[in-house]
Structure formats: structure tokens, C-alpha cells
Amino acid sequence: MKLNVLFLVRKTKLNKKGMCPIRCRITHNKQRHQFATGIFINPKFWNSKQQIVKPPEPDAELINSQLSLIKTKINRAFLMLQVQENDFTVEDIYKTYKGEKIEKQYNVIEFFERYLKRLKTLIGIDIKEVTWNKFYYVKEDVKRFIKWKFKTNDIPLKELKANFLTEGYNIENNLEILDGYELKPFGFFDYEKYRCETKFLVESKTKNVKAISFVLSKEKENNDKIRYLCLPINNEVLFKKFKKKHENLGLTIIEVLNHFGNLMISGYVEQIHNSNNKDIKTTDEEYEFLTMKYPTLNNDLLEGYQFKTFIEEIIEEKYKYNYQLFVESETQNVKAVLITLTKLKNNDDKIKYLCMPLNNQELYTKFKAAIINLGVNMGFYLDVSNFSLVSKIVDNRYNSK
Image (cartoon, rainbow, N blue to C red; front, side):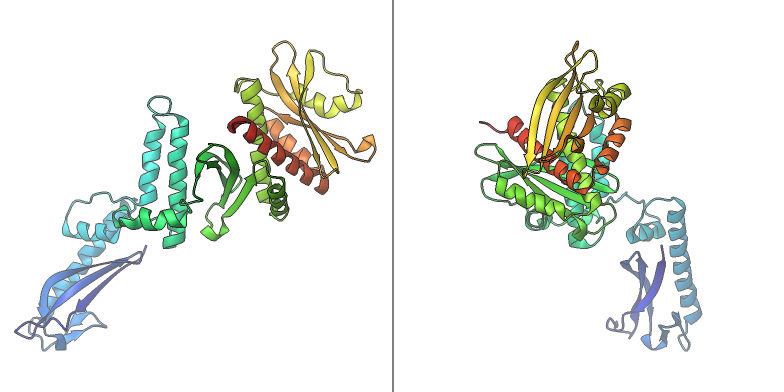
């Protein structure tokens, strides 16, 4: 946090006596503020390198003392602001030097985040969580635009111009999308160092969801590091393109997308079959049975449980993925999703069993590890199967038939 104080002589501003004003320039964090000192000198006697007035200027000693005092007061103001441990601007330094009261000047994102924090306390009272999420998505969009447009993480709120939204932000963030369509926020989540935002591409006339847009951004990276993906709904040709693009992503990005697929599938099961009850969880005993005991018991079930058919996916006639709901007979609550993976045209020893747990983070970690242990091919086609299922879930829940 370097401060620079420089005195400038305006030789082009001579008065009738041949004297010119000395101005002071304060520079801090690449921001400048200039002001008049009220001191006039003969420019012939000014030494810009040493920043002093030299004889034969008759008042050289007095003027140099005045300049030294100004510089000392500015440095003292800078030190006072540093001690307060709050962010400040070059304008704040000048106002402190002048003895004026500083009004807090917010940056755009800083102010937005303060507003969101206050708004969050009203969830369930005056607003719904989905409303808060919409404000959050807008803030993230604005944040990315500022990073792209101004090459910085934030800009002062007072510097916003009227065309910031109308001529800049809307265009650069592709808010003017295809005629007859709109983007609607769906949700977001964090995975390791990535944030994934999802939006629905909705046909305005029918209100049908035509695709899911993914925006993946990594913390502390530039805008050019943001990835954009599109999962089509009910379009086999475009789904193949999505699969091809998915194939070429880095491992961490693939994990982020996989996490989304798992959230969508488990969330759908919870909402449709368990009335969105988060207290219904997969137990260690249930997980162990489905992943270790069930494969060796000739499909004999744990007492008090039953299977219900969910969906089956066959990918390129190479692999079959059978999703079944593991249901507690007495309550009819779904406790987990069993995924049976079969390599077609092969023996039964190529069958694998995975348990997708519900509302149990420890077991979910085991589930992710089990996916990694499937191997490259079977694991990749499981990802494809999951996204095919996600596409069908979205179509089933949001699109009119």
C-alpha cells in the first residue's frame, strides 16, 4: 500500500506577476488526486527533482517549510487510515488530510454482497430462498463482467455510468439471447475450487426447458478460465456433441459435472418419493448390504426392504445401467439408489454394483471413490448415463407433454 506525494509547478498558469501555482498530487493504488496548495512561486526557482524552492526566491525557506508540512500531514492521514484496517481510497486520504468526515465509499460487488447478506436474514420471512438465489446469480454475473471489462475484481460504485447495464453488461453477458427464449437461474454449488452455476434455457412461448447451461468458474482465475457447457434436452444428436465435449474436459471439471448429475438424481428421488424429507438417510448397514452383500447373495434382499424399478439406460450398446430404488417396505421411503452396471456381451463377473446414498456425506464420499475405481470406460459411460437420466428428469418435471 504505497503512497506517493508529488508537488507540481504549473508553468503554463502564470499570473500577472509571473508567478505560477504549486499543486500537490497524491497517488495511492494507481489512483490520483490533485489539489491546489495555495502557494505561488517563480517557476525559475523550482527544483522538481529535489521538490524544493531555491534562492534567489526570497521566501524559499518559508515555502519549503509549508510544502514539508503538507507532505507530513498527508503521510499522517495515510497512517491513520492504515491503523483503522479498513479499505480506503486516495479520496479518503485527501479528506482525512483536510480534516473532513469520510463517508464510506462502497465498491459494486462489495455493496452487492452486503445487500445479499442482509437479504438472507429475510428468507422464510419476507422472501423465498429461490428469490435470494436469483439475486446471487445476478451478482456473480456482474462480478464476471467487471473482471472481463475492467481487468479488476471490483470497481467503485460511484464510478458506474448509466450505460454500464444497458450497453455493456447485457451485451457482454449474452443476456440478449435468441428471440423467443430466456435464461432462468436453476441453482449453484461449490465443488473443491470450482463454482458451478446452472440455468435453464426456456422457450418463452411454451415455457419448456430446452437445455441446461453450465457456467464453471475457478476461484481467483481470470474470465478466460470460465467454462461453458450445454446439456440438451431430448436431442440425441446434440447429446452426442455434449458427450464428446465432456470427454475432453479435465478430470476436476468432470468431477464437478458428475457431482451435479448425482445431486439432480438424488434430489429428484427425494422430492418425488420422499416428499423432500432430508431426515431420510442411507444408513451404513444399507450401504454395506447393497455394495458388498447383495452381489454375493444371489439377489436376496435385506429383510424389510424391496426394490422398485426406476430407469434403465443402455449406452451405445456397450454398457447397461439399471437404476433401482431401494425402498423400506414399512414406510415406503426410498433409502438409496442401486445402480447395476453391466458390460454387454460379457460374463456376469463384469457386473458392478454402486449405491448412490441419500443425505449422507460420509457415504457419498465412498460412492465417489467407488466410481473412480470403475475404470476409465465404465466410469465414463456412467457419467453419460447419468446425464441422459438428468435430461429425462428435467423433461419430465418441467416440460408440458
